[in-house]
Amino acid sequence: DTAVSQTPKYLVTQMGNDKSIKCEQNLGHDTMYWYKQDSKKFLKIMFSYNNKELIINETVPNRFSPKSPDKAHLNLHINSLELGDSAVYFCASSQVDGTDTQYFGPGTRLTVL
Amino acid sequence: EDQVTQSPEALRLQEGESSSLNCSYTVSGLRGLFWYRQDPGKGPEFLFTLYSAGEEKEKERLKATLTKKESFLHITAPKPEDSATYLCAVEDSGAGSYQLTFGKGTKLSVIP
Image 1 (cartoon, rainbow over the protein chains, first blue to last red):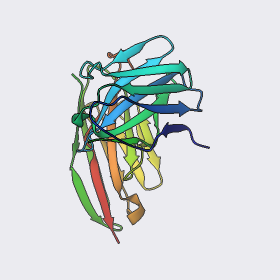
Image 2: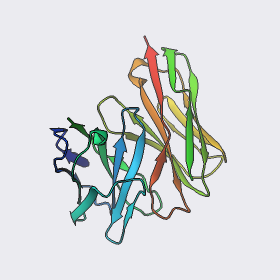
Image 3: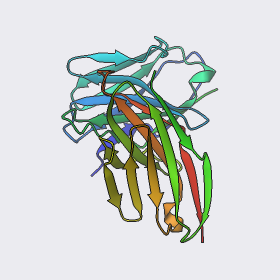
């Protein structure tokens, strides 16, 4: 039973397009996250979100926006894609109850041509 | 700003040759230090959480320890299946956002 799932696994698109990546967790967690892993494999937080607040890393362009239809889903929308957006994007979730362990999805490899 | 530095960047071991990976960190207040394993093409897989200096946790051939400035991941008698990138991350109690700051990882290769 997959705990954190993402679709699609691979996404290839042209510069300037708008795309979305979906994330779902079945762990009953209250907080979800998006991370970006660049070509050097460095994993960096983009957003954290629970039903109370959205925290955005200040370095994330406003072309990126998370949208949460419900507690189990946090989708990532990207407008006007640029070459530099090519990376692997990971969704994660946690229950903020003192343990805070984050569980990661399998990743979405985005390639912008 | 939180900082996490992992060393070495890459480590090549013979099967059975024990070693340690280092994670040094700077945070205003440590809420937790996390170790993850990442295989190629996959998401990070949770290994351990450490919360306070002196704490140790073990799982099979892995043992994680924590001091006020660094954490070690000790690998005893490694096997080829232990080959992966090991990531260290910290959660800052002062950040208020539960976000993790990751190091760049140590790529471990265990040769049969």
